[in-house]
Image (cartoon, rainbow, N blue to C red; front, side, top):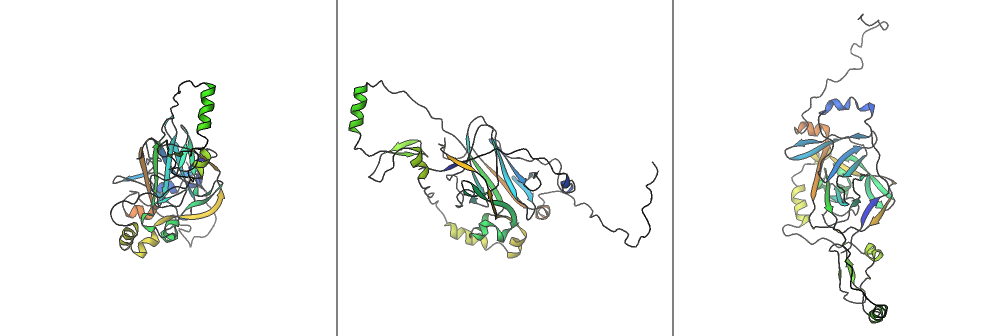
Length: 320
């Protein structure tokens, strides 16, 4: 089966920490890491400030604290010398197709040592809808009837199968022309991008084995897994969540449209299972502090008028 894999048109730049965030850093551990993953590094970047959100490990999971209303990007860096495929999801939704996320779907191809910033839901080869932290009921997943996996960013990483070209036996010009004449009326095979081989044609509707035909092929749906249906599972889990809890939790919204250029490429996976799956959960900082994820002490709140009744002018500071 043929899939569409995207390559972003430009690499991301390096972002510095905005000076205005000095106060915010008091609320988090200065020693917190900023990336997770081994095959790839995954970071969450607040776009309006350039601040890379610190990673907080807790009970085997990784967390970041999002700020409601802030736009963010997922920065993925390939740490290997070979091309990799990053199938990415936000809130359990594939960020390219909008399908409920699965490993066998399309993703972004990264070249050796390459870094990309993914800034939104892919709407076309030249446009995305920005990722932004928003209340869970207003998130894209919740608005499309899938609220149960809101609050997590996922990256499944696949290696690429090397293409080996084996030389065939020498063929004379007369033999080559004879073979062409014999094959003119035979149906052409269809290239299977997932398995990296040709399958025999089954009728007149079979496609020719060419990259352009592969790029136009529709992505088939994943085979259903045994057990409860997704609808039954979603109903059971949603019943365990209160409306009040949902209002205070963060999700990812379908933000404003903005330019983001990409092109398609072909990528043959070297396995059906990913090399690794990176998972980063997120929520509001106060929720993470309340849950014990961020073991930070809130600083004393500064008062704009500590002595509201004081009068007079500004005195000199004490002598050194």
